[in-house]
Length: 200
Image 1 (tube, helix red, strand yellow):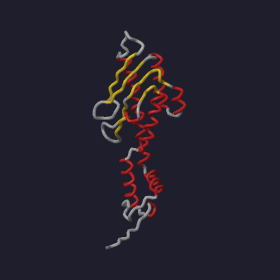
Image 2: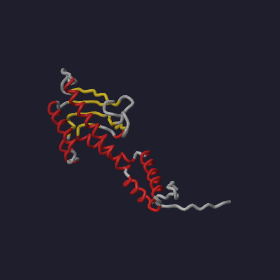
Image 3: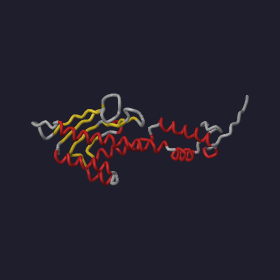
Image 4: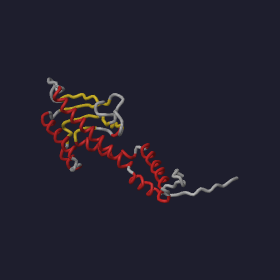
């Protein structure tokens, strides 16, 4: 029998090259996990609800963040009656893009108070153009609400919202992958490494 002793080090005890290797290990583990974006998507579901959409967390699709075809979209429904602009402003008072989308949806809803839409994801990508919209006016049996101008206005606002959530996800990803955040996590969890930065 042979007993081998190995010295273990915490992040701050490593040399610069080993620290870089430790950060790479942490970064890879963070990418492979879904925890980094869960709060962003939960926040989005709440915001979408205030804007009149009913979206479930597992119906938000995205890919990112540096390849062709990257983006975000969602499946769900929209009802004019569900728009709660005051609640949105109270929840996210500093977000100018959300305020713009909310104000334009409020104007749209004023003209179409019984508007309903279903949004479905299709295709192989997750960006905003991989969606199909089915629109109708629940109050008008004899009129077709799906005239091009009306549909286009709503679809454009919905896709603006898809762009918005993609930017939130990208911002959170950049934050989680930044060296400072990785180092804070390594220190807080007191991870141990061999001298060359390999996770023990």
